[in-house]
Amino acid sequence: MNKQLEKVFHEFEQSAFWNFLGLELNELKEGFAKITLPIQPSFINVKKSVHGGIYTSVLDTTMGIAARSLGFDEVVTLQMNVQFLQSIDNGVMYSEASVLNRTRSTALMEGKLCDQEDNLIAHCTGTFKISKVDKP
Image (cartoon, rainbow, N blue to C red; front, side, top):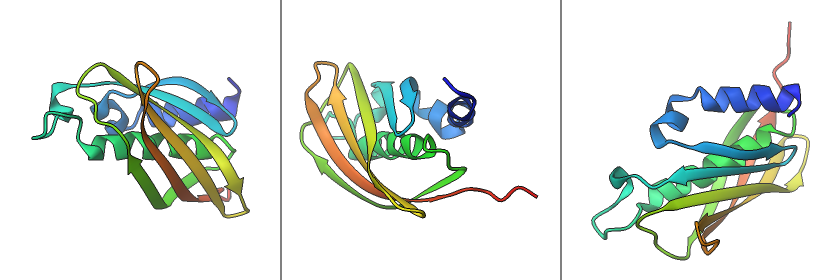
């Protein structure tokens, strides 16, 4: 992993939210990320399945880290559209994100969330504002 990708990974890895959920980075390369999340009992909603907010959080985080891997210092979610396809109640889920299109100031990302048998359980697209921090 190059220095830029290591920096991005370490920033996410040190995030309180990252650690709260229990996210695990499996792969990070320019424009692509794969994250795994073991399902915890606290993720289960009244319907006895993982809450959609967990799906959305994992997809948002995976797309965000993939956007950051393009060499940007700041990435902000502008819009997300999630299709919830199947429920899950145990095991492990994983998310993959990649770049669909990039301009100077935005990145259109795609995220896929799957269960441990590789069944697609959610699909997402998101638009992210991307920027570099000017160094003095």
